[in-house]
Image (spheres, rainbow, N blue to C red):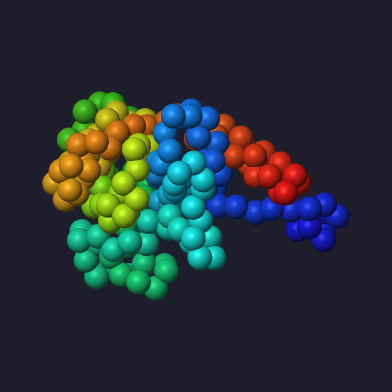
Length: 206
């Protein structure tokens, strides 16, 4: 890309950029995990105020952590039972498209949730539990002050967030789960743009 444009180029994962941008919304928080739930599930991890990307930038690929509900289902990554194949948007639409009905997009899912459809609400709560299960190891290793959930699924009521809290309460250390604040954001896209700008300036001024 740099050769094509004739300009310096820096590339970064979208969840990481969003986490970078969200630092300004939480200036007094040293460590937090931002989880984006969309067509896949990824996390941006900030530790001691700095983005942690890990080896080859692969830190935060929580969508490929196996969860119990995943069973032996094959994932596109080559492993089985991965979180994203149970709790990302395509997985939820697939699960709800049964028994003669077809749920084609998030707008249709939102309509079901708004109308109080029990199956749709239960699917969101279950997805939240799966996400929380996958995050237990992450939060135990990092002990973040805040867990931020983003993506349109988090705006369909508090069902998904409640499921995340349930798993953390059940499986994480009580002394830890009782201290972690679980919240949501609607500003992840703006935060991503802000994070991209910060990354570009860091590169130019290094």
